[in-house]
Image (cartoon, rainbow, N blue to C red; front, side, top):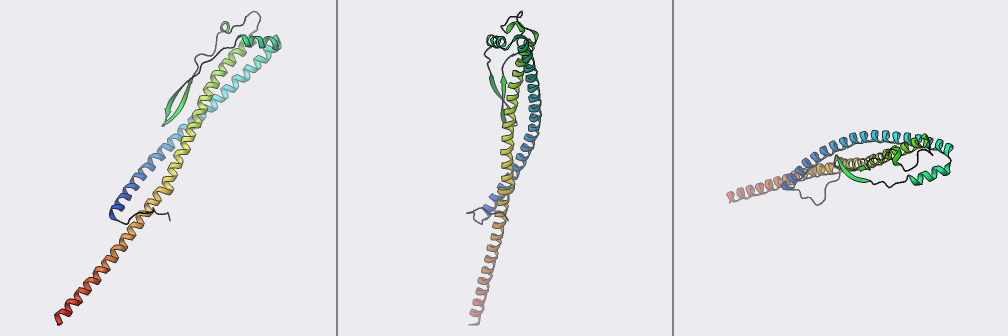
Length: 219
């Protein structure tokens, strides 16, 4: 049997107050279960998105490294290193938030990362198509990595909210509501005892008064 609440007086007022608390707790429990189920459903959607984002990012990186390796074979690693220094650039990252079932998740913006060939800063005559392919694949992979980071953080935050909501549902279901109901039952039983004791006391008083009355009538 669940523990009862401490320092609760066995009064009708207290009984009514606890019954109202049970109704509120039941309503809260139902709403939290609905939220938990909706969050789990959303979590599964985001997990699928994460897996697809990861697959695409890994695919582009794999292609980029293969193209880069071929470019190194054709041009030499020293030339590739020099071109890498020439084509380097700063990238700005903007982070906003959106709301999923009450959970704030990031939205990351970088602008267009894939450049045209002539925008990369190296000469076209001294390079080859494999270098262009590698650069394009790396730029596309970077966009996908940013998206992957966004989705991965969304997964983490939604998972935390699912866990927190599950703990609250379990606390209501297995601790709060059982304790309230056990306390209500305890008060009801105690009030019945008090009523019985009062009834017996009144009966004794009535019997005593009747005995005195009969004794007085005989005198």
